[in-house]
Length: 252
Ligand code: PEP
Image: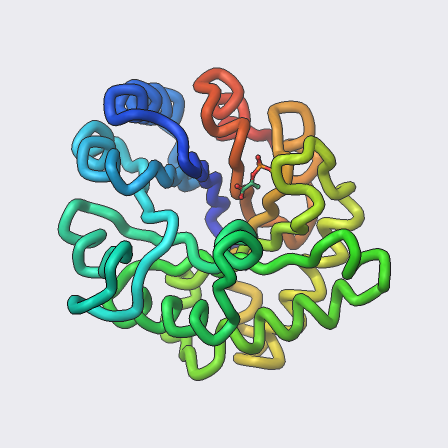
């Protein structure tokens, strides 16, 4: 089953607008001529409009690092799906571990965000992943199952290309400790089987599952060579133009 690989850069709370535009232009340059993969960048909200303008016509997707479920109203600090669409975003990261663990976002809240994004026509990138304590307690699969089932509750999938899951073990995010290719493949295969239970096999094998957690230019190829790894969600290494350019040009 053909799944277009997606390399996504999450810039977190980094870059001023001018830094973001410069980095975005280098990503657009590095992505030129790569028709067999998609590239996405998620700058901070303050730089989104400028970045979207800078990469216009390059094929590089721009995403919000989060998105609200509501279209407008009294939601101080939030950004509506329509606001992201209005400036050219096509995707939104939802349920990132930093949102879950620093800001206390719950599976119920994350589920509402996925529904709101999808209803508006944004591609939700639903992040799931276990902490180190959960892995050591052999609870990885139980945690992934709970996060996936609750995050996707009531979500129907008409077009499997319009939903992306990111498996990001919390212990690997920003730590320099990457999951081994075997650990990544095992978790991704588990997630895909679960997607087949939630939807159906034919849909599950078309949904992209990204790996995230200290992906860099040295480990990306091995990770991307795994059967169920369909892309990468990259944090720290996405802020370095040369490194991210090499990640975009991963070799299978
Ligand atoms: C992330 O922000 O989703 C991430 C995986 O960060 P890093 O690549 O720095 O581990």
